[in-house]
Length: 357
Image (tube, rainbow, N blue to C red; front, side, top):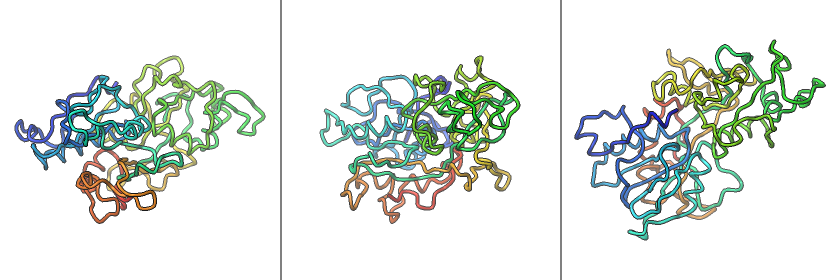
């Protein structure tokens, strides 16, 4: 799994000192970050892209300037997010990162310094989110379903069919059948039951996928509800077990492209392959490069979330973060939006309104 492949992230002046190129971004901070550093946690989907952008930012802003760090979603735990902060479980996923940001914990060595300055999120703002945070979109992703190569899966499923599969309720298809959906009920030849697998509950990819297919309640046949399956990886033991030929699993298209096309986490996809939804492929070829199909129905934005320095009616980005994330209006782009090569190199598409609240 990916956490076994991770190495410590070397930043800023250290990069220049040992001659590591910006292409070799590594995870986490080499030591406990200082109170002046800018630290984030959260989404698995954008963690490697943020690792690269942190590397690029720190190379351009060497010590003693504040450094940008991005704690990965999975790794050794607990972590100390900054100097003077309490040792805490590593936040895994968009929801966990946002919760950690909202906790507003501060360092005991500098009462003005928050332990976490931003959260990576692959889900967008929701009605239940407080007005004390703002979402800054920075790239375009898509989510589709995946299945093991050579299994019983069909090439395409509609969102209605995916809802029935994840509801474990064939009656939603209007075929007169009940119980878990079988492949021959959705255009396949096998009579085997489809085995839906879901990532852990803090996953923004999970939340977006279920919302997109209209699922409000997972059925009892869905595996992974014990939070043992990490998002966007196909090398979990569940994918090579007895159900391998019949598994379906949501997947970030950008992460899959990073793994298969750009050598970032190569092999983490296992034997999983992306499938079409609602009759459209999630990818297309542009100039010889496989990229996200921007016309795919399950396209989404990915975000960095920061505290709201303004009001509910006029939200604003804290001044100390504007050099990294922009000012929220587009007048000041910030380093994240200016580093477009990292965005595309990790499979995402550029977003014209990057950094605008």
